[in-house]
Length: 320
Ligand code: FAQ
Image 1 (cartoon, helix red, strand yellow):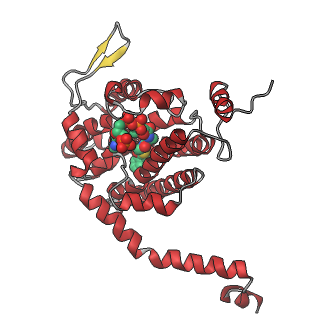
Image 2: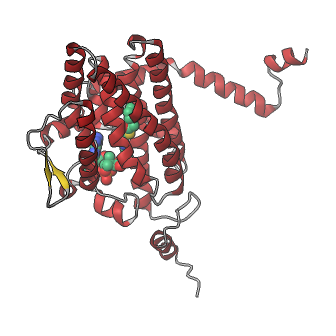
Image 3: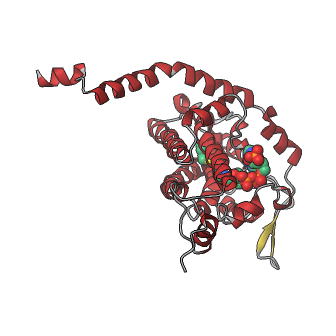
């Protein structure tokens, strides 16, 4: 007999790997968890444009500049897909963006660290995009349809980002002593914050259990972090550089790398808003929002005009 119990239909879809779509019934807590995670993800993409944007005017060649501009624009696009996915959950974009600007909403801890040298741009591409992809590949199989579909496209673009970051570091690693030192220094500063991107240990993670049951998350924070360490510990050898962890060692029994403990005090301090650049990042986003008000107003005026059928000046000129 076909069930009419909405909760049963929802659970059945989750069990059978059928995506939940915006018009489907869903538990209120599932909807809230998705709004929280997807909007935090969107904010991370947008705030994540700032540390790299800082180097667009100073990229060392025209080619590097063009690539960096394209990458930063991609991040803006990712933010837009994700804000759009959040809006399908019955919350306006204005509400989610207000929460970012007021400091209420979180975004990834990683973007509260400064980009001091050009090598930092390489380290962000290789390590930060690398960690982001590790997480996002599993999110392509997340149970909510609009989020899963956004992730497929985002992952394709992130793979290019990671390659470009590695290429910057590879070039520096084959350069002068000064360039090699710069490369090692950037790796040393970005390594631990990259590991923090995966979130607290599973035992301390408030959402993992439920999110795994709902198949929003398909792997836990610690599982993904381990996969990332295993990948990077091999790739760093190609650069001829090292990772700043004396405890990093291949464990033949586990068939994984062992690694040292993250400084969790630093992590929670950054998450609570006290990292090196938290204040600066929020100020930059608020300023951009205020300065962009005229663009939003103009776009709305144009949309109203189009809806009312009044021809715009542009189209009159074309007709003439
Ligand atoms: N930073 O219970 P859990 C990118 C919070 S995209 C800040 O484990 P959950 C692209 C967490 O929100 C990078 N806060 O939480 C790019 C929760 O607080 P709440 C972003 C963190 O959700 C590259 C509390 O701690 N990616 O980089 C962090 O199950 C280059 C307890 O944690 C995503 O957002 C953190 N690192 O697992 C752009 C992927 N970790 O909300 C530009 C989607 C945890 O209760 C340049 N998100 N918290 O107040 C996820 O996969 C998950 O949300 C996790 C956290 C894994 C981040």
